[in-house]
Picture (cartoon, rainbow, N blue to C red):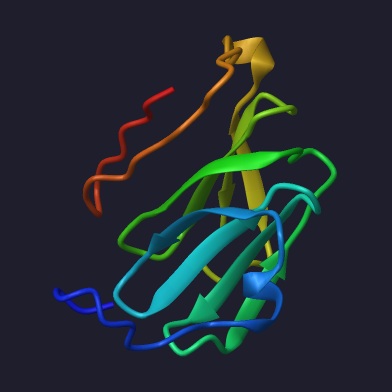
Length: 121
């Protein structure tokens, strides 16, 4: 969409299905979560699939952000955890869990710079 509100491009397919609520971008990628299917999608700015990520320990993925290296950080609302997904979508690591005190009803995160990340929950 441009500054006047004119739609420049639309991405359809699975990205237009229900359940896509949380979206973030980097300079060349779009990341989004499907809260009903517990999926994290990565596509190019033109809508070409790059990877799809799912793991049993991430339930109801909500807040999402990416760092300067295109690693993705996503919060599981029901699983009460914070996961980092590697830039290629092939590996992940749980950074925080409910055992670390994550109990927020509305977890969101933000990544500010390449070297530092701040979590807002």
